[in-house]
Amino acid sequence: MTTDPRFWDQLAEKYAAQPVSDPAAFARKIEVMKARLRPTDVVVELGCGTGSLALILAPFAGAVHGLDYSPEMIRIARGKVAPGDSHVHFHVGAAEDPAALPVAEGGADLVLACSLLHLVPDRQAVLARLLRLLKPGGTLVASTVCLGESWVPYRPILTVMQWLGKAPPVWALTKAGLADELRRAGFVEVDAPDVGAEPKVSFLTGRKPPAGAPA
Image 1: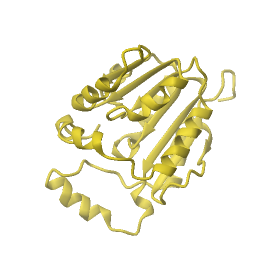
Image 2 (image 1 turned 135 degrees about the vertical axis):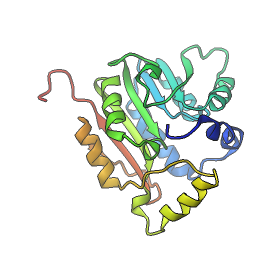
Image 3 (image 1 turned 60 degrees about the vertical axis):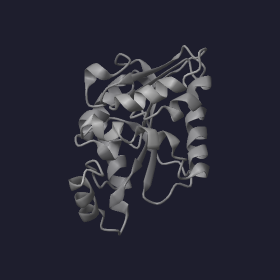
Image 4 (image 1 turned 90 degrees about the vertical axis):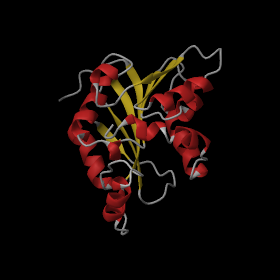
């Protein structure tokens, strides 16, 4: 990520207790993800936080791996894993670090990047890495705050909050721009399912081209 993990560590307990801001939209996002899952699939969630989403999807997958920059977030996530859920694993590491990725290239059927891409400075490098992580025909699902969609002057507000240590570096993306970034990284069938999310949230799906597809 783009800041000291201690920033996220100090937020972990509050983050874990915080309710979902838009339960209806979140439920529809879950249904989109579940529709792309088979019982044998390998799921990798980057920026998994305290593991809530990974654990919701775990009953529908063969293996689930969550990765987060914050050791404290991962400590809480591991504490949520039921004793019988031996197929659920949480790891400490950054999405930008190839060595931290919990499965080998070409090993994931579904990759999730939720509330992550607006925190990544070199998204093209990260998206290219996520494409390589997927099996041919595998799916990326990304839910991203796009502050470039809002008329509110977030940049000066964020600058002050960052100076006070109250916010991480954030990139003001647009929905169209982010979709184009996925396509430039090599994803195909990039789509924005309507899940009823608030206007500044981009919810995108994209696929890695099947084996043998034209480059």
